Amino acid sequence: MVVPGMNLPSLVRIVSLPAIALIGAIACGGCRRASEADCEKIVDRIVELQLREQGVTDPETIAKRREETKARKRDELLRGCVGKRIGTSALQCIEKAATSTEIVDVCLR
Image (tube, rainbow, N blue to C red):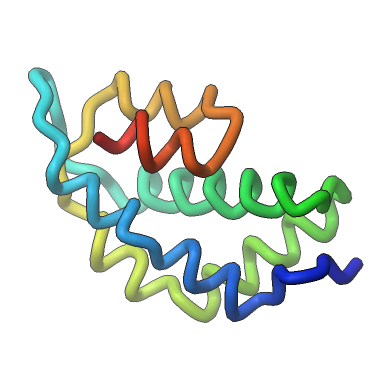
C-alpha cells in the first residue's frame, strides 16, 4: 500500500527525529537508563503511529515499514537513545499515546 506523501525516506527522517534525543533531556525522579529494548519499543511505536496517521492500518504493512526503518537507521536510533535517562511514566505514556506528536510533545518532555 502506497501512502501519498509518506515514502520510506520521509518516514526514516521522522523516526530519526529529535524525539529520540529528547530522552536525554527528561528530568524525572526514579529514572533509569534506557535499554536497547526500551529504545526499540519507542521507535516501533513512533513508526506505527506515524503510519496510522497517514492512513496505513494494515498490520503487515506496518510491520514491514517498521522493520525497513529499523534496518536502515538502527545504529543511529539506538546511539541517540540507549543509555539516556527515561522514567517509567514516560514509557507508559508512549504506550498509551494516540499520536506520534503526543510522544514527542508530551511523553518525552
